[in-house]
Length: 217
Ligand code: 3PG
Image (cartoon, rainbow, N blue to C red; front, side, top):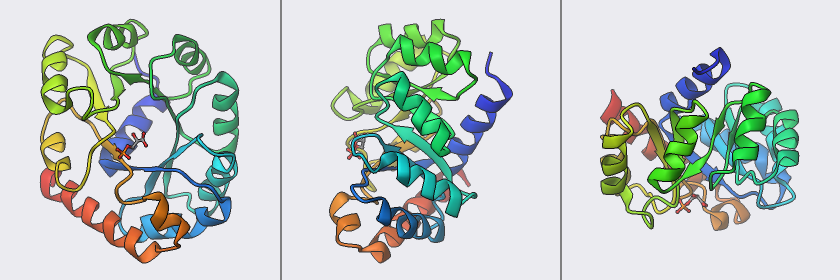
């Protein structure tokens, strides 16, 4: 059974539909990045713990753009869960299925979306009472046909595919009822961020938002 907080988190992520997966090397880029995403109609970001700037970036985005839904991505340790939540992250996302992280999040009522790839990992998530998981790396792990095949067995499970998704193939993912949101970096590529091309980020975010609207109304 999902807690009230988790239900709200799932609703928020589903509503945005496409979650920009961000690697920020410089927390100074967080504010203009947030502005571009909000203006583009995609008020969400999965800020990955792949750089030292992740924690500070989450703090800045949460403070400056309370209307944004901030997820922490690439969370590999319980210590990172604490850092992410204290910084303002509303959901913990990990690339793989780590029972320790899932257990810790559930015990502390922290919404969590662990990575899965195989039926066994999806079943492990199900046994923890989860009904929303990440599917990563989506295109490498069999893409939409794999989600449909695994999802046919796991009738109540919904997926957030991430990895190899772009403006061209995202439509077919979003059209699948097993998918509650998609993640991707195509609208927030590192070179766009480091080159401070926030106009391009805003344009890609808008394009992604239009796709969500087109498919989900
Ligand atoms: C990642 O691992 O960086 C995310 O899953 C995004 O993948 P992408 O760059 O293929 O969109």
